[in-house]
Amino acid sequence: MRRRARILAVPTLAFHIDVTRPADRELLVRATWTGTEGGEAEFFLPTWTPGSYLLREYARHVSTVRAFAPGTEDELPCEKIQKNRWRAATRGGAVELRYRVYAHELTVRTADVDAHHAYWNHTCALLWPVGQDRTPADIVVDHPLGWRLCCSLQHEKLEEDGRARCTLRAADLDDALDAPVLIGDTERRTWSVDGVPHAIELDGLEGVAPPPSMADDLRAICETAQAVFGEELPYESYLFQALFCDQGYGGLEHRNSSTLLMPRTSLTTEKGYREFLGLAAHELFHAWNVKRLRPAELWSYDYEQENYTRMLWLMEGWTAYYDDLLVARAGLSTQSTYLASMAKNVQGMRSAPGRFALSLEESSFDAWIRLYRPDENTRNSSQNYYGNGAVAAMCLDLGLRRATGGQRSLDDVLRQLWRETYEQQRGYELEDVRRAVTEVGGSERFEELREMVAGPLDPALEDVLSYVGVRLETRDDGKPFLGIAFRANSTFVASVTRDEPAFRGGVAPGDELLAVQQLRVTSESWQTVFAAVAEVGAPVELTVARRGVLRTLEVTPAANPGRVQLVADEDATPAQQEARAAWLGATRATAAHG
Image (cartoon, rainbow, N blue to C red; front, top):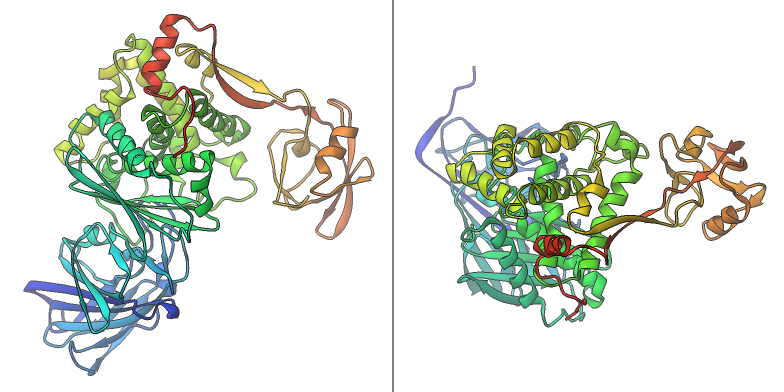
């Protein structure tokens, strides 16, 4: 029988991460644990990162883990016992683990090291002693001189022996895993809100100049986000880590920071810069909604397995609703620009029949196996709780405004939920949401919300939008339509929309469309040829290659439902115009780009 280890009175944990040889594309890690008397110690590496609901299996990038008596070359027994767990012998209650982490994946969730920068989430790198989640840790980082280390953890810096050294101090496991590290020759912009320091570190711009107004624009967004909750800022400082490359897009929230990933050229166009501000607003809003205000089932994280919730429509959907809205309220976009961004959400909702197959609650619960693992049938079988959740949030917000004569809104629901749950140091449940919505706008508003998130999502948008004098219009409708989407730059079918003409005619994902009415088509000519020979209600012959065999299918085009647009009604009443102004805030009459 294995002897049970005893925990010493004052356990200590320290990590040393060396990136002084960035060309190796590795983190060299030493983890020193002193806390187990006799026997063995067990360590684990997280399998996922909060905010990104998929098991990422970070252990696949960890080399062989070796154990030593601390400060010596005396090797101790160490074995891997699970995909992400290791057991090591200790000497005098202490052990030092040595291992490498391969770092060549530039995303907001992972690790990337090269000759120009280093970025990593600690979820990829820190082997933590099992059962010691509340143990504080020092994380010492060595990196090349001339690079600046940027992290939301408290840290001390010094230079020695031709390299820079920085010591980060984490209060516990949650603290360590919620503070990614960026090191490089970054550009820094700073500002303050109510005396609270904020900064953005810009990495990878390669000579692309950020807009001169960036700090002022981000300050305006921070102030606008703060106004939603009507409280002091919930953090003592905030850091945006902005990664730029040739392509890619994403963001990940943390308690006192966030990481943004976008093409560097996005800062050079009005549209791209507005998208950058929207992404920054989204991740910043998470400092309230998700990092602090969150469901009871996610109040404490289990970093080794799926953490299920049915509330991602609120966590991500409501945040997706507020992101572009904050940009508009901050005066950084026009009403028409905001309405165009919201129209994309409506278009996405209406074009995906999965909203009738799986509710927002069910899609939230299934995030681990659906949203982050899409296939050709995802749009038919599930729904996106980001965009569709944003549509539901808009409907709730405008319904609350209408029911209260413009006196209350979704802002008030969030404030109420914040006071009743987060400030009481607990996570919320659906009953808390019911009480908050009911107190702000009455029980009917909650029943409308419940209908949207627990059943098919099909809100009466025309009526909802009429309160603020906005019309829902469709453009390019009535043309022949099949209901298929192609893979990029090809005529290979990526997806077929359920119950649309191509679906009924037998077209399948993976088919290569070769001809329409015996006319050869390519990715460049498809639309032109189809428009020339197709009529609504008249069968057309499609020639496809399916798994190496030519097939002929007969498909009858339907009328295209068109592209959704949200348009401010020029004939809106003064009351509607006033309601719209209260909803969208200080939007500019014309767009501006710094």
